[in-house]
Length: 205
Image (cartoon, rainbow, N blue to C red; front, side, top):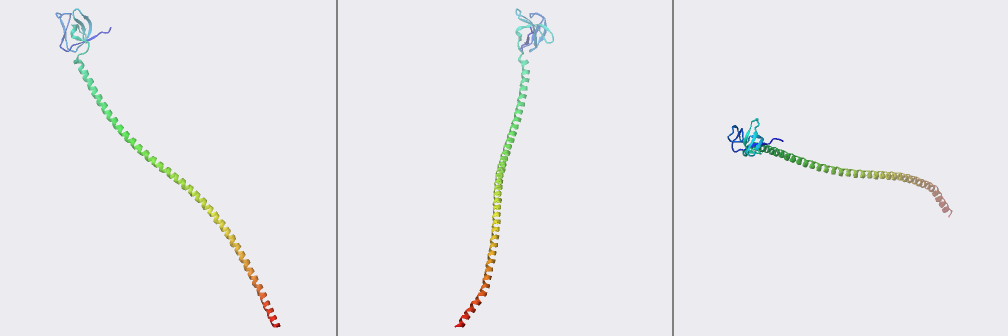
């Protein structure tokens, strides 16, 4: 069975004696808060046999012992814990401040990214519109080229037809000119004879 510990009360110094009576020799004086190992309890005399950390053994009145450390012993530990808690609180406060700064920086970065994304979307929309316009212009250009080609074909056909008409007109004028020439020659031959006959007939009267 593990030995129990007791602590001297913080009211006054306790006498450790060699026996279970105030008449026994004082072995040593125990200061308040001294930790003692319980060796034996004598309920009849009201004494408890204990041993100090240095190995000194003796008897002390049981009523001057307690099961937990005194406030005097606990206070330094509590002060240390309080100091540690304050240090931890300061550390956490600093960490929280850094986290807030990081959060604000991230929020700014997110805002910048959103703005950049919006700008990129606008540029993409503009490029899309330009692409659509380019496609439409290309289509119109193709249509115009087709119309120009058709017009050129029509012009070529008209030129051929015009040349044919001009050639035909030249031939017709040539024929007409020839006919006029022949008619002139014939008239030149016939008219003198007609006039001679008329003169001849008039001379007969």
